[in-house]
Image (cartoon, rainbow, N blue to C red; front, side, top):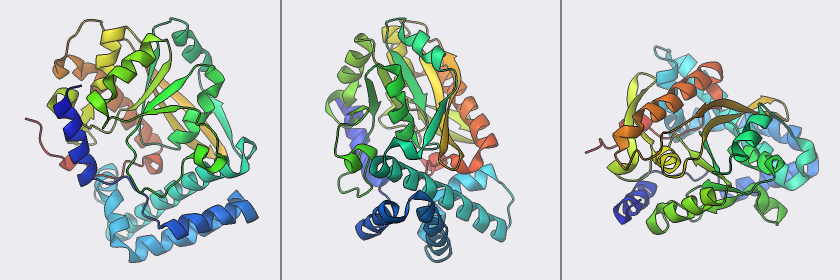
Length: 313
């Protein structure tokens, strides 16, 4: 990744915010409620808070409108309001689960690994493993659950300064189950990512959030419109020979999560830097994501307008 891509990442991060909509005191209230009354009491409070936000905070409805209007086209105003409420409740419960995991410990939640042996087999190949996921379910819980692979895990993640929403390990006061690589760092973290794969470790990248210039993304069709998605994971796979596994974590029940291994992608080596060479692999990821949102429409939490980004030049 070039220095111009890194500058593009910084500019995009200023125009789109990943910060929680809640204030510091609201987060602390929920953290205290979880400690004193447990996760289920916090679930009840999430319903009332979500109702307030959806009814009286238009900005909250606006965050999910681009996705929901495409996932459920033709809805009337009442159904659109219900959809916004449902997805707000779901993300609220996921945030409660994430906090509970850090505050109360892993005994509060369980995760089921689909095709765990497939992941272990890919790691044994010795070329590293690239996991491509999306803003679905509780990705932090998925990262924590990857401890079972007994292999270091790194995550490409840009975290905004001043974000008050705590990570799991920040609640516990210990080390994270994964190492964070910042795409806004030197060379977009490319050297760090290559080192991870060179050492045969696991690298996780969000496949639904393009950050960087035109050389790092392609436009593909998603839910009836054109969106930009990154080709970085597939470029890395071509450069290193690492297999790419598409995974989606999702909430399968109260206190239960599943890690869905969707497919394994084999990217030919030596494809170079041209993003168009990686379009088939980006398309394969997006088709898998469309299947996920078809089955679990209220567990896709990519709260920005993917269909209204600056056109690629």
